[in-house]
Structures are given as structure tokens and as C-alpha cells.
Length: 306
Length: 117
Image (cartoon, rainbow over all chains, first blue to last red; front, side, top):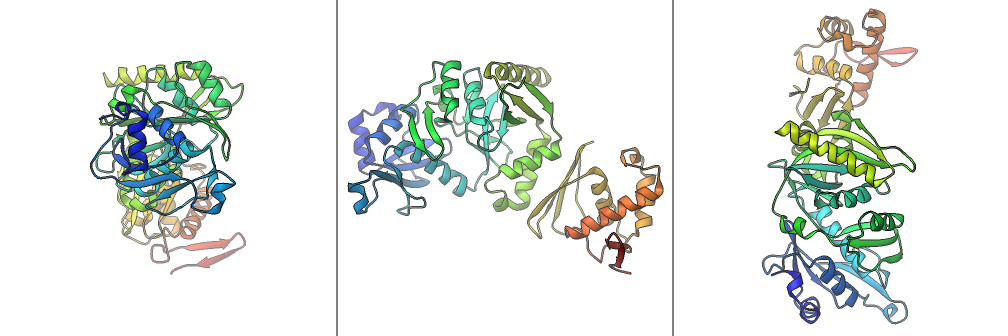
């Protein structure tokens, strides 16, 4: 059963009652919320995702604070197993807070994976890992490639299986901020954005629906093929330059949420990732240029594999 | 050029790449990126099974067929100073200790400290 099979009333009943057990890649979140904007956000962005009635990895909710403040200052609060790990946010940030909370659960608690703060896409069976800090243009580049033939595995969290070195897909709504939203809307007018939320700690935030194909293929893992460190540079010509594997590995370690949890096994895993990947830095300013560069990279990889 | 090796010392894991070696020191929970030359020196110390002196290290590095990768390799004196500096840094990082070396290691530019003899 998919989220899209439920009408607003049925979705409401689940979210206000026992919870919606939303399957996203390898994890299931049991979500409760009485808020219309959360229900509408889930209905739009997760329409293709499965509803799972089995075990839930994380029990979370987006609600109003249980204090008198709720009556004179609308706020939303994220709860995990009844605890409130974050300060409340302004009242219209329910859906972004749900997304940030879900990221927090996976990055901080799903230690069956080694998790990188990196976007990841797939083409011809090879995964392209884009590790980079916020503001580097990682999510914008990822979003653009989604509309140029690359399969979205995740725009934010790269899950690596220590047993197989495979990237485990976690296709969820793609988050963009500020100017990137308008840039992508011009680049890919078909992107289905939900309502933009302004004045968050990150500025204006918008999510667009993940492609249905990416969600349907959630179980199809991919082995790493490229590690590319992107950097948005206004006015820059596209520049793809080889990066030493030692340096690439250090960058992956810097971007890992739980490298320390995995110890020597995590070290060996990340070493395997860079050994099997072509590693580059990439500077860009225009998405069309970037799409061309990565199309050539994919073609080259396919030729080598073939 | 990519090779993997197991360092002799317990708790050290490393992978060698053309631009250096990444080493995980599980005793301290730290990961280091070492230059190729530094990785060579560490490997000689940890894997050789003996306690080498600085001169032993320089001899062995200069006799290595890959020696052209060493900066100033033709200048033995410069190589000696370079290796000394590497040993000091490896000691500071806790990757080698007084049991590993039979050398005089300068603690500062103007003095020298015998860490083991």
C-alpha cells in the first residue's frame, strides 16, 4: 500500500491515531502528527512510498508544544520516543522539521550503516557520491542530475553497508534552500515543489517530490563508482579535476556521521569506497554545464565497465 | 601503485594510495593522512622488526627503487634532516614510541633529545 492510496481523511486518521508507518529505503518511521501541513507534505512528497505495518525503527511526532505558549505563539516540536531533542520552531515549519528529524534519526541512530553527509545518485549501476558541507552546491547539483537521467539515492545521507560496500538507497524529498530553489525551478520546471517555508534557520526552504522511479527502485543498491567534491563558484567555468584517493578518503571521513562508531571496520569500508571509485573535485556555476560534465563521466564509466 | 599492508603494531590499519597513506590508529581513535615518504618511514620502522637508527632509515630509503619520489633524495644530508623531521612528527602523533627507534630525535631546532638508546 502506498501513501498515495490514502485520501486526506484516512491519512489524518493514521497520523492522529496509531501513526503512519512510512517505509523510506531500509528504515520505517512511525509518524504521528495532528498538523494539516505535515499531512499535506507527506501526501505530496511521499505519495509513492510504501506504508508498512511491520516493525518501525523510529517513533516520531510533529506536534504543538504542550505548554501555554501554544496559545499565543504557534510553534512546532519534534518528538522522538516521547523526547524532545530540539528546540521548537516557528509554527509553519512542521514539514521541514519532520524531514530534519527523520535525517537526525537515521544519521544518529542507524548504525547498521556507515552514514555520510553526502548526496548520492546512480547511473549505469555505479553510485556517484557527492560529499560536501552545506552551502557547497551539493544538493542543487544533486537535484539537477535527478532531472538529467541520474537515479536519486539520497540528497542528504549516503548509507553504506559495511558488509558489502554497497550504497543503500534512501530516496526522500529533495531539500533546497534560498536561491537554489528558483535556479532549479528554471532548470527543471517539472519539479513538484511543496509550499516554500521562509525564515527558517536555513533561510527559505523548499522540498520537491522524489521521482517515482527512484522510490520504486529503493531496494536496488549500487556500488560506489565516483567520489566527487562539488563546489559552487559564481561565474566559474566547469572544472573537473582528479583528486588523490588518500585526500578523498579523508574527506569522506570528515563527512561521516558515525565513523567513530564503526572503528576499524569503518576505516576499511571507506578505503574500499575510494579504491573502487574515480575521485575528483568539481567547480561549477551553471547547472547545464554540470549536467554535461556528469553525462560524459557516466558515459566514460560505462565504456570502461563494458 | 595502490597497495594495502598491515602494520606490525597492534591497532594500526592503513591503506596506501598514490598520494599517500591513510592510517587509522585504533588505540587513539585517530585517522591520519601521511605523505608517501612518511608512510615509507613508518613502514620501515613498524614492519622491519628491528629498531633502526636515522642512518639506517636513510640508507634503506635511498636504496629503495622508488627513491626518486623522495624530495632531495640525491642529497644525503637533506634526506637525513627530512627523515629526522618525519620521526619527530610520527612520535608526536603517537604512531611510534621510544621502543621503536634507536635514534637521537631533535625535540627542538636547537637541541636534541635521546628518546631511546
